[in-house]
Image (cartoon, rainbow, N blue to C red; front, side, top):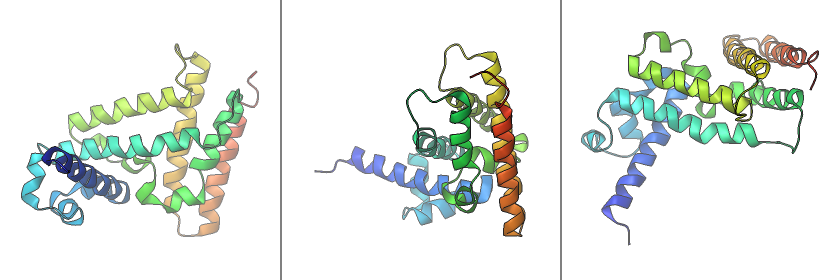
Amino acid sequence: MTTRADQKRESRARILEVASRSLREQGLTGAAIAAVMQEAGLTHGAFYSHFANKDQLAQDAFHYALDTGQPRWFENGKQDDESWSTRLNRLAASYLSPKHRDDRANGCAIATLVSEVATATDTFKQAYGERVETTLRAICDDEDPIDDGRLEDAIVFLALCVGGLNLSRTIDDPRRSSQILAACRRGIDRLTGNRQQ
């Protein structure tokens, strides 16, 4: 038997699924309460039994997007004892791909929102910054402590991924757009080329 608490959890999950997809497609404006609730099949009034305000919805949808998307990215094709260079190239091949570029609804929320965060609320900026930090740690395979050289590589890697993906999405010419993705992947390959693995 489904309890009221179960129904509330299911409704909240449905809201977050819709909001996270909208956030990745449309940016922070995609977290509009009325549109999200309508697409989730719920009334506008039910929103406040799940979230305090639109900012909380945006933050929770952002976390949901990363919590559901990043594990697939980090684990897809992972091999035991892969070198640092192999790890970065594997992650880049998935991130800097035409498939990721074209699938905004399931893409990286860090990339989608990067240009909006500077003008977002302080609480959203803090949440975004914290997730960038956890992403850098995950790129380094959650090493503790993180090697300074690897952390610097991870920062450059993330900047190339986010910047390359966003730039490729602004170009109408598919050939040039794919060229940008490929150039960024080659840049990542060179990033660790001279470092001893």
